[in-house]
Amino acid sequence: MSYRDRPLDGAAIVRLRVGQALLLDPAGRPAGSTLEVLEGVARVFCPCEETGGMTLAFLQSGDHLCSDRLCSEGMCLEALTPLSFRRDAQPQQGHGFDAVNEWTLQLLRIRHLGSAEQRLHALLSLLVRRLGRRCGPWCDLPFRLTHDRIAELIGTTRVTTTRLISRIRQDQLLAVPSDQPGLRLAPELVESAPLAA
Image 1 (cartoon, rainbow, N blue to C red):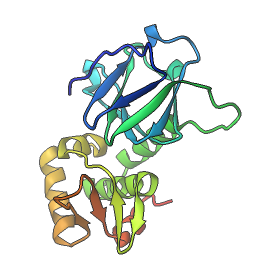
Image 2: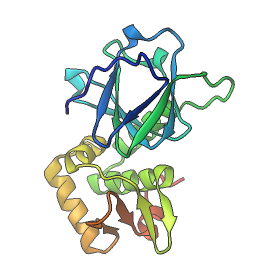
Image 3: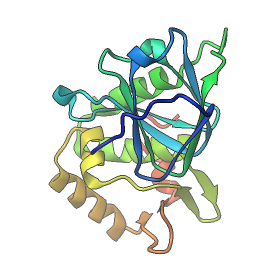
Image 4: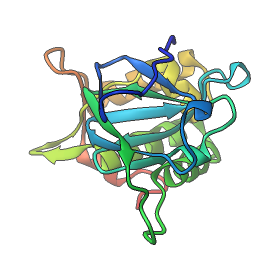
């Protein structure tokens, strides 16, 4: 994936189109800087070559990203849906909740499940519970992830991921509407997942 090393000078609100990624260089940000997602869903990932774009978190409206917690190489935000964020948000004080830390913990828990099938099941459930919504007989997730990205998240190969997703689709627990940018999952898939909250 390519990303733009775009300075955040100027406008306080930054907008990204779906698929755009932005490198947040900690050297160019004052200590204590915080970004707040105003609208959309973003993937937070590490740009280091050694990690190959490892996903650390997903952020949605209201979530904050503190630049003090970025690695020395910086951090990248990828817009999974149309995204806008405020670059000069006030750090949250006393809330005791950090969206990036929470996501990293949940993704780590998923990676430690015994089988790739369990890990995929838990990941899909987590994404829908945190970023999706119930719409009638389905649960909608407003974006799609590539099979390569899902494989990275669950610690398996793209081929295995594709095979597992095909099986879930054949069981009519997952639908990929061609006229929508997201996914639809059956509530029973979401509710029966390992690590369900």
